[in-house]
Image (cartoon, rainbow, N blue to C red; front, side, top):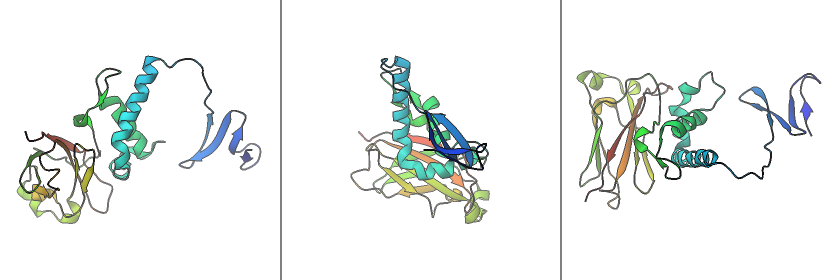
Length: 214
């Protein structure tokens, strides 16, 4: 049963026939219920479904970070930050041809924004963990930490995220992940982005892959 708001000519909430009315992000929305079909799905539909699953598998563990990293991209749009990120990764971060599709970690973008991104990003394994480095100018070292916070993401081959978001600044130019011994030497993907503390200003993330030690 649907209920009307502001009289019969206003918006409604609930189901009327095959239409549902609801409010999303302050906007009154109506959508039709999906219809069941006995037709076999086309290869295009199957490929789209697989692309969706691959993108969701990558983004879901990072939903909280994506909400921050894509916040500015979603401003003024009838889409959530997560949906914008999902749309991007479905289109640009899936490689191969169906049914041999795969997620391309080098094309993933964890955050967007106008701040200057990391330059000369590099990473290597050490006996203590993963050493990540980037270009830092003398001016970066003089900046106040609250204006120069760094966020780093690291993804290991077992798809477990190790996230560091405090105590790291652009001016440091280097950070050591003290990872467990069973992870050291594995194939990993590193994502690094800068943001201004206590604000939503972000840089676009940068990526580097570290090959497993042989």
